[in-house]
Image (tube, rainbow, N blue to C red):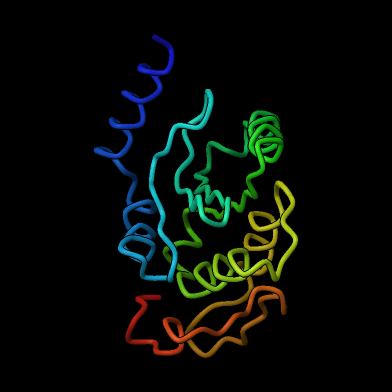
Length: 160
């Protein structure tokens, strides 16, 4: 009974995606990064935003309400880690304003080039995106946040 409720909630979340989830899903779907992703996937008592089962990677997008639920997020991440998943988090605003860097971070996580902690990606992106960005400003993202692959090489492939 409980599992069917979680599955039903996941189905509802897929039908009512946030703008940030829809934006990132465009880049993750159909093996566009070379890996299969699923969205709004029930895992235990939780529903994760995006999952790549091949690499056991979970991608979570966080809005402003996550500032007040960091304890819950840490508990959830600990459970997912115990199940063998790596979790990477991004703020919704960074998905829109720094799409290319978010995708590069995801590719690095998929390739195992970065060791993930529960809040590494979220805190780092928030810290660096406040001063970096477009419009002739210097790119100040940390070196672990850069990654090159054929899909990301052409700026015409990605709407930043």
